[in-house]
Image 1 (spheres, rainbow, N blue to C red):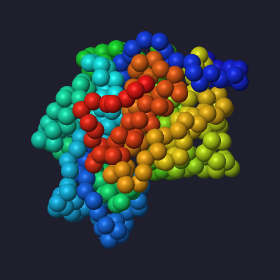
Image 2 (tube, rainbow, N blue to C red):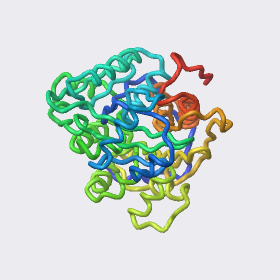
Image 3 (cartoon, rainbow, N blue to C red):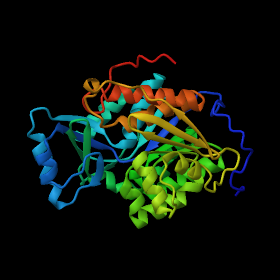
Image 4 (cartoon, rainbow, N blue to C red):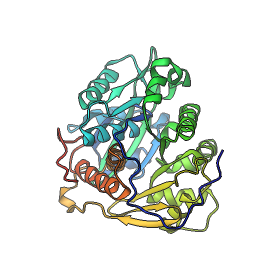
Length: 361
């Protein structure tokens, strides 16, 4: 194990992450999103907060039928990591740029997702569970806010044995960038750790997203996060998660930039490259910290009437950023791609997008 990164303070945000086209592998919880517009009354009925993400309890189970009964209900291939991988593939428009693993049921919902991913050009290597159905996420859209309620079902059954199968580990070997949303911590922390260690030992890039406050608040999940952090090359999160993370560490900082700077300097196993911390802040500029130094990058400002649905905006930002990594771009260009992808997604219902990006780099 090399010493934690402690290089010079002269950080160059213009240094490319690498110089050649790469392959991206995502691992996460594949879910079919059931999305509809809801009123405050429905949020109150299920005790849901705007802009939150939770795992469903028994009291939330009737919610899916309530959403399905809405005239504007949409069924969309989802799950945070799968969203980001699909967006990265869409932005890159390069065949075979990405692959994805997670567990689904042996059912129609799984087939819907597989079809969508394959149409997008993502190589899916799902583990298939014979008896547990594909997971679903209730997306309650309320104005510009959204509240997510997830029943993991088959997604919760992912096992490291699937990752270790020769054809699947071959995908790991072939990939140079890895991404998981923190939500996968609740399912297969051993798989995440194995891939993160592989990335560290082979000087590849391991990316993680803080995902939601509960990942940081629940002791066993936080313990996994702490264990993974020295192996994380790029950490994503939003302003709420940043503040929650600082609190969980017992820090006094509440300023998002100061927290990002501190997180970037936490001990790191691969000392050959510093950790990059990327914190989005909704409509505000994105904060990036490398080696304790801060830069901010603008998002694409949109008038309120252009914003249709903020669900998936954060996932899209990550996808855009990852597409920059795939092409060996620097932080500034990665953030520009993230901002573009996020701006496209919020103008579409559900985490959907046009056939091709209209992106000028």
